[in-house]
Image 1 (cartoon, one colour):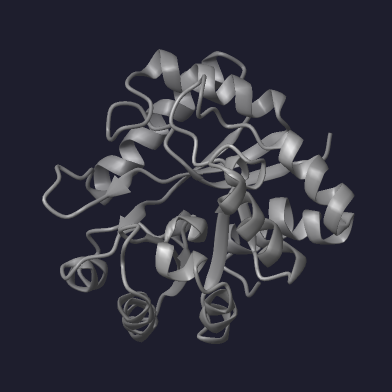
Image 2 (tube, rainbow, N blue to C red):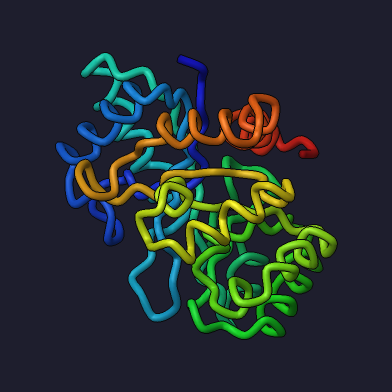
Length: 241
């Protein structure tokens, strides 16, 4: 099985709506390892008006999870990050070091409300870049103002953004329309990352292997290698994609 990197998951225990405890996190890591996932960037939610894990605790909790995984002979490498729900406070928090980038790189994973306007998403991308970061748009298939105008994905990449979609969306778990949108932007090679967005060990487990095989079959092994490993490796190394 080819190595895979997951840049978006909620495996860190007890910090958001993902894994509730260490036992659940370890079960998720076991699943990830069986799926061929060799590296995971832990991306707990960072949302306005929530009790968000601080960067210091983010690192400390990752180390604790790493130690527990090592004791269970789980070899998945873990990195710190956040899934940043964009708000009026985001820029100050980024600039003041209150949010984790992905694996300490210049890349940040940014999400929006599903009904966020196209203009607000554009403006957010400009502002994140103005602060010296490179935006990766989390699960682009969730934003109605983009799904209804697929050409806007190309516009985002022209702005310097990178695009992440969830494996479950590609595989049809969220309906035909979302699946069709994902396949269209994959065909146009506008996607840069496929991630699990895992929240548990059952319905939203860290599973990517079926989707990787599907993408290889439909869109070619070279593109699949970029989507599931090479681009993410460049994020971890803080290199250009």
